[in-house]
Image (cartoon, rainbow, N blue to C red; front, top):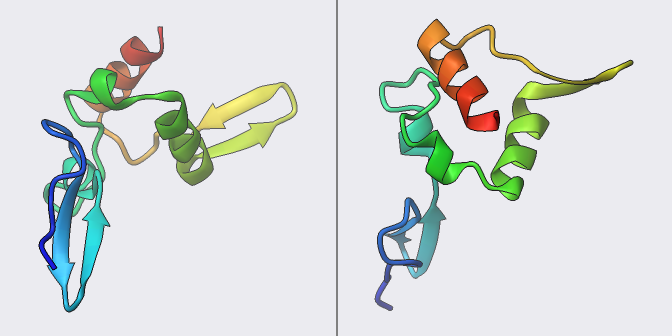
Length: 86
């Protein structure tokens, strides 16, 4: 079994493990040194589905809306995320 790219020029790639091809997605972009960051190309990556994943992982529903917890991000990462959502 040969593993292939899912989409040309995308952050999705496949890794062969035994007889299976595993889809490894964006983890290396968000954890390049083992610490979670907001990648510089977040504008290109933040689709409605990606936003849903961000909210499910780092968000919470509050009385008057939604909060995305950014405590562990650098100021630069938070500003990048804010600019992407504008």
